Image 1 (spheres, rainbow, N blue to C red):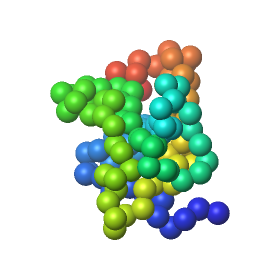
Image 2: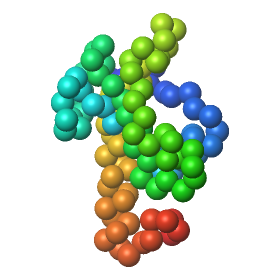
Image 3: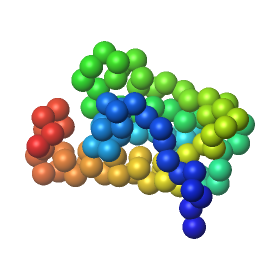
Length: 110
């Protein structure tokens, strides 16, 4: 179903924030303005963008909106599976929506 190359190698702080859905990646396809997620693998025109949902530190603001082009993954690593990245992005969005609906303050996480 999924390739073995579905993981991301991240610095520890980024990894924890990724796991808690504070940030995610979305795939911007070609020249499209809308953020469309596709189930196929990346092409040379597809670019991931960092989306910080709860930026609290200066480095979060620096990363928010940063483009990660396909060549950034290098010749030794496959890009992450776009289906899994799309799933993670949807989970992060839904966590924000649900949090607002139950009165959770997104800045205090709880």
